[in-house]
Image (cartoon, rainbow, N blue to C red):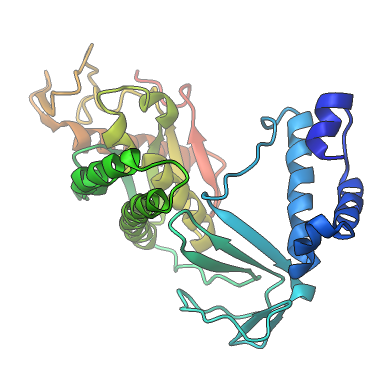
Length: 348
């Protein structure tokens, strides 16, 4: 009896112990003899993941588990008793020869688990779970605030503008052409699979280019500054805007914040996130005057005090002032992510 059948027909919960017993019975069935072709460890790990998914569902933390499509990302996790690692070569259980690996980054230490994954573009990856000591960057006195945007992914309070490579826009015509060819192929045919693979490879290329750009940008910010101050945006809500959804997704603000968060923790830096309701763009950084409204198309404006404000740079300067206040009076330590709530960033 499967976990799905137990839930829908009898409203019962199946634990890992019960599903593992069902796996043993399936292996004894000649119809499922192919389950013996691989080591039992990845199969058991999959059942553990299923058990975790159901626990999260019944606790209200997640939706009901769904089957993954074969053409999407797949993975197999091997525990320490299911692989051999001699410091240079990796041999998985029931394999006669080690895997041929093109290394992205070498590591030191003994891995506890190994995960082999395949993405929708038929690329294979091996990830090792290993405990490493990360050397923290030396402490410096520099602080920077960044305003997230579309023309430039970030504009800093120091006047640096990152630009925006717009990788999706760069490959949009080619992607549309490949998707149009895919739509014309007969479902289930080999030609359709070939066309799907071409689309997947181009989409993977766009994603890799975007991640490479963001990784280089975030590590530069973390290396050159002790504290990085930014705004906390509700990207999921902003992306509902049909006119701006593509460019917002292409800028990948949420991924940028995620990278800043974990890199600050790794390298002994501080990330401060200012409440998104703080009027950073409408407020003059020189005198504090706040405009009643500031349409998105207006990129610069003159304040009543006489100062000329560039929208993004002005916002970054305001975020810097708020962030410094949080760092000076807040309970923030190295490696923390501080949240400046709206009560702390009043526009008065």
